Amino acid sequence: MASSSKKRCVVPENMSVGFIGAGRMAQAMSRGFIESGMIRANNIVASDPDASMLGFIQKLGVNTTEDNKEVVAKSDLICIAVKPNNVSKVLEEVAPVVTTKNIFLSIAAGIKIGMIEKLLPEKTRVIRVMPNTPALVQSAASVFAMGSYAQNGDGDLVAELLSSIGICEEGKESLLDAVTGLSGSGPAYAFAAIESMADGGVKMGLPRDLAQKLAAQTMLGAAKMVLESGKHPGELKDGVCSPAGTTIAAMHKLEKAGFRGALIDAVEAATLRARELGS
Ligand SMILES: NC(=O)c1ccc[n+]([C@@H]2O[C@H](COP(=O)([O-])OP(=O)(O)OC[C@H]3O[C@@H](n4cnc5c(N)ncnc54)[C@H](OP(=O)(O)O)[C@@H]3O)[C@@H](O)[C@H]2O)c1
Image (cartoon, rainbow, N blue to C red; front, side, top):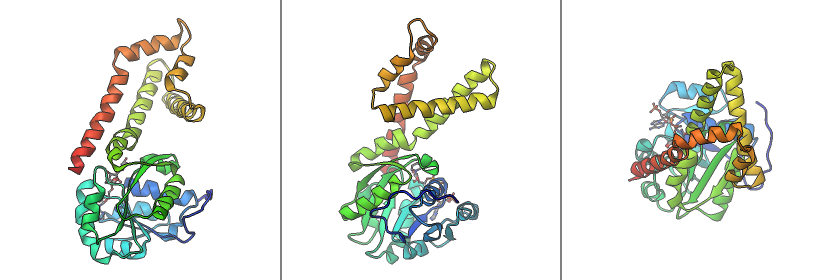
């Protein structure tokens, strides 16, 4: 697998990473870590009761086991990558083998650091992060919050690791449910937008594969312009809308259909659901 080694300052060459739960996020993150050159595949171990999930992750060169405790014993950093409703069961199971060398990184939506700390031995270093699936293509958007016993160096390490698969910011834990609603769930909104734009192209006579490629590249290009120019998206939108032109006609339709309101509602709904999962 291609390795495009990114700059490393604090992540040790031989750092071992474990994933408890080998589903979509574990696969996306481990692929990102391996392809960025940050973690070697043979320094990653993943556990899951589902043999097919282990089969998928093995294809990346990752070691696998059905034993969650083995993951903890073999890893410096353990990523809790099971669904939120399985987190407490997993933590209770592995707590007896946790040592002071371990750092726990939870990606479970809504699950609070305090709850994780309570289920693990006293003073365990915990960091909670909300990444997203574009980790798979090293374009994740992640925000992490430090636990009560996590040390500054742990935060630096997690920041460097997550930066190898996209952008990474540190924030207060109180922000993480909203991060879940925006960027954690956001790839689904973007996929739906790409699909719908492609449908529009097909309706107007474009071949499906061309329509999809154009829709996806347009989203990618627009996102890059926002990130790289630092300009307000409204200003960039105005730049595409010429007087009496095609784009302003389309924008009028979007406004009438409640496009912006629907996206704001979507982020709010996902945030509230994340809050529910954590209560
Ligand atoms: N998907 C996203 O876009 C996204 C984004 C950000 C954060 N997250 C968070 O990431 C976490 C994982 O999400 P995901 O989408 O990767 O879920 P997923 O694809 O369902 O993967 C979770 C895996 O954990 C396995 N599992 C269940 N109980 C287990 C146990 N006791 N020990 C070990 N493995 C166990 C599941 O197996 P079974 O299917 O057999 O139960 C499943 O294969 C969630 O907490 C979610 O909130 C997800």
